[in-house]
Length: 458
Image 1 (cartoon, rainbow, N blue to C red):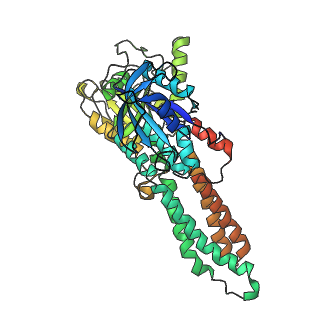
Image 2 (cartoon, rainbow, N blue to C red):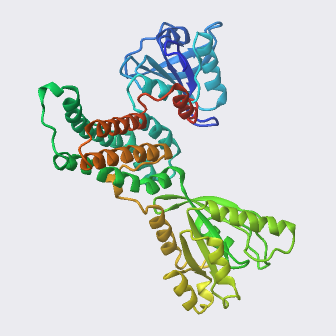
Image 3 (cartoon, one colour):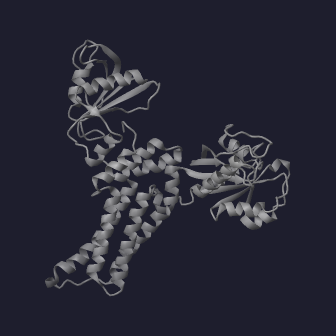
C-alpha cells in the first residue's frame, strides 16, 4: 500500500482539447505547491480562501515564466475529497497547459498519482467505504441516466446503510448468544429459537431480495449484452443500424455480407445495452464464413439476451427454427420477425416455440420501439428488488451470498437443538463477510487491485 504522508498530483480531466482542464494536488505539500506555483495578478503570493475560486497566474517555479491563467480552489483538511489539504487548478483545456502545470507541480515535490489514488485515500481515511468508492468509478463510466442513478444511490450510502442494518440485527442476536456462553455462572436464560428467529428471518429475506437485484445492478454497471442471430439476409444488420440510429453495419442483398461481429452501444429506454450483430447462421461456404459463424455462436454464448431474427418476407427454411433454438442454447431469447412491411410468414411455429413474437420493420422503424422496450424489460428484470439499491459487482454478490449461507446455518442450528456456540460462530462469519463487502479488513493487495481499475486523477 502506498504511503499517505506524501503529496500526489494528476490531471483529473480526460486528455484532449476542451474548455477546461483540472490539475489536482492532495497531501501535505499542497499549500507549499500553491506558494511555489501561483501568483496574483500583481505578481505577489497567492491569497487562497477555503472553497473559493481565485483567479491567479501559474508560473514556472524556476524561471517565473507564465504557464497559464488559472482558477485555483483551495480545500483544507479534513473538508476535502481525500480529507487532506487539496489544491485544484483549473487551466485552459488541452494537453500543453495541463501537462506544463503538472510538470511544475511535480518539480515542487509531489509525485504522480496512481490510478484511483485520490479515491483510495478517501477510502483509507474513512470518508468512503469500498462500495461507495467503487460507485465513484462506476459513475464515471455510466452510460445512461438510469444507470447513473443506480451508482449515485450507492455513492450516497444506500447499500452501505442496508448492510449496517444487517450488522446491527445480527449483532443483537450474537450478543445474546455470547452472553449466555461467556457468563454461564450467571445462569442467563437462553432465548428460544422461536424468539430469535424473527430477527434472523428478516435479515435472510432482505439478503435474498438483494441477491435478486444483482442481474439489474450488473446490467446497469456493465451494460446488457444482446446478440442478434439469424440466417443470412434476415435483416440483422439493418436491424442493428435501426436500433443504433446509425449506419454501423454494411447492408446488402448479397448473402453472407457480415463475416465478423459488430458491437455498438445503445440506450434502451434507460438500460445501457451492448448490441452485437453476427454472421448469418448457415452451412459455411468458405473458411472466412466458417470463422464468422463460430464468432456468432461465441457471441451468443456470452450474451445476456438473444434476438432471434426471422425474415418476414418468406417462409421459414427447413430446419431454420431448430437451428435458431439450438444456437440459443436455452438462453433468454426474443423471436423477432423482421420485414413486417413486406408481408408476414405463418407464425404458428414461432408462437408455439416462443409464446410471443415481435414484428418489426428495420426499413420503416415499425415495431422498433416495442423491441427496445422488450430489451429494456429484460435488462431491468430484477429492478425493484432489494429496495432500489442493487448489488452491481460479483464481489458484492459473493459476499452477500456467503453471509446469507451463514445466517441460514445459524438459524438451522438454533432450531435443531439450541447449539448456541455453533450458531454464534456462523453469525460471526456472516458479520465478517459483510465487513469484507464494505472493505473493512480487506488485504492490501485486494484493495490496490480494486483501485487500480480507476482512471488516473480520480
